[in-house]
Amino acid sequence: MNSILNAQQDMREAYYCGAPGVISSGTAWFVAGLVAVIVSPTAGILTLLLGGMLIFPISIVFCRLIGASGKHKKENPLAALAIEGTFGMLISIPIAAGLAFYRIEWFFPAMLFVIGGRYLTFSTLYGRRLYWAFAVILVITGWLLLATNAPVFSGAFTGAFIEYFFGVMLFIFYKREQANKPSKSDAASGAS
Image 1 (cartoon, one colour):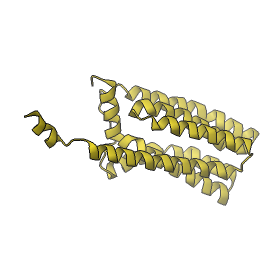
Image 2 (image 1 turned 135 degrees about the vertical axis):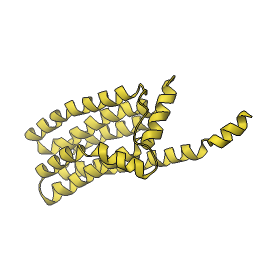
Image 3 (image 1 turned 180 degrees about the vertical axis):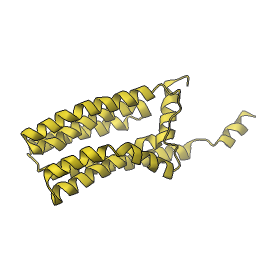
Image 4 (image 1 turned 90 degrees about the vertical axis):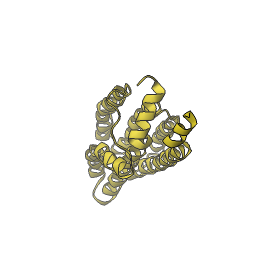
């Protein structure tokens, strides 16, 4: 892999520009919101924490179902950034969990900050600035939820809505990008 652009293209092709992961994450947030309403806010928090562990494996299955490999090339230099971003997110989650002991309504807004920070790195991973807008909206929403003292479940449902919205946008943009990409037969005929 001889350029950042090639590495980003490999990531986009392997993971459908991250759309399956974003939609899987949105589903974890949505289920957490349901559990927060039906069972308890604490159960909703635990649901997001436990469901979060399933996001990557579910997104890989989703990738394969829609024709992406779910696996980047071994030599892709951006793989390290993906792992570092994951560890950065994981070591930030205890901050959100700790805030929940102080004020339970602060957990989901704090998690919006955590995942907003993670999605900033996705702009570099996938070469798509849409992830910057995604991150900014997550952070602004987190602040708004805190400022309005929103109930626990609303943070979970709001996070789910934002993730679903951007997941669908990423899916559409990537599908459009693939449709506009010259086929291998077109490239071969142009070379002759």
